[in-house]
Amino acid sequence: MCDERSVLVQGKNFICTWCEHQENLERGIIRMVEEYKLLFPNRLITVSSVSDWCGLNINRSKLYRILRKHFEMVGSGKNAFYR
Image (cartoon, rainbow, N blue to C red; front, side, top):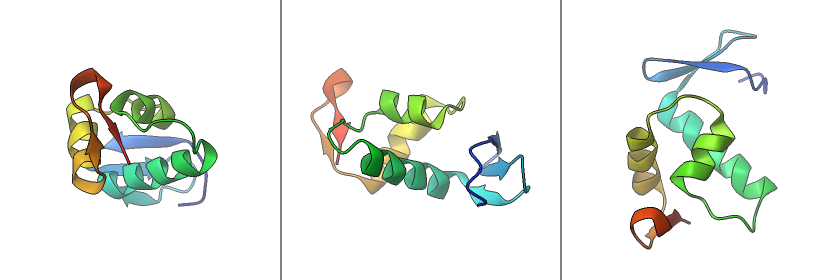
């Protein structure tokens, strides 16, 4: 990616509106979560926080599945977070 924050979701990919580079949606979300962790080390990683950080209309169920696959889930329900 060219580090431009203007991306669109198209199918299973992010597409940069600046350079038209494509990135797998799952890898892009993981990259954004890692950026979030670096910038806000004291904040919890939740589906809501990732959704807000990404700033895109990504299905919450999809975010949940990706977070569960790549991070350890702590707690359950609305109190769940990931590390």
